[in-house]
Image (cartoon, rainbow, N blue to C red; front, side):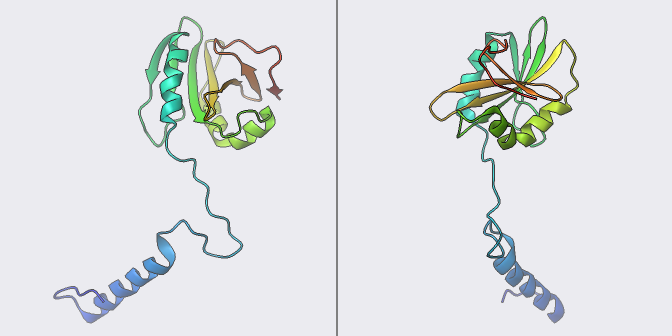
Length: 162
C-alpha cells in the first residue's frame, strides 16, 4: 500500500482502493467479459499512403495538408480552379472489396466527409491504399460513393454505391 505522508487514514484507504480498481478494471484493451469483443482501433495515420498521395494530389492542383488533429475530417485539400477537393487518405487492408464493403468499412470517415458543405465547386473524396501500393479513389456525395480515377473523373467500369 502506498503511503501519503500527513494524510488521514481514510484518504490512504481510498487511494489504495483506487489503485487496486485501476489494476483490475481500467487501463487495458482486453474485454471485460467473455462475450465482449476487443475494441477495434483504426491505428495510426497512414504515413506511407499520405506520402504517396501528395504527388497524386499535386497533379490535380495546389496541395494543403492537415496536420495531425484528432478532430480532422480530411487530410489533404486540393486547390484548383474548379473544384476544390477535400480528401481523406486511408489504409485499406482489402482494397479489392466491393464499394458496398468499403463503404461499410469506412462508414465513419465517409460520414465525416459528408459534413463538409459542397456544391459544384467543392467536392470530397476518399482515397484508399493497400499495403502493396494499389490505390482506389471515390467521390463522396451526400447519398453515394462513385469510383473515380486519379484525376477525379468517374471510372467507366467503376462501382457506384447509391
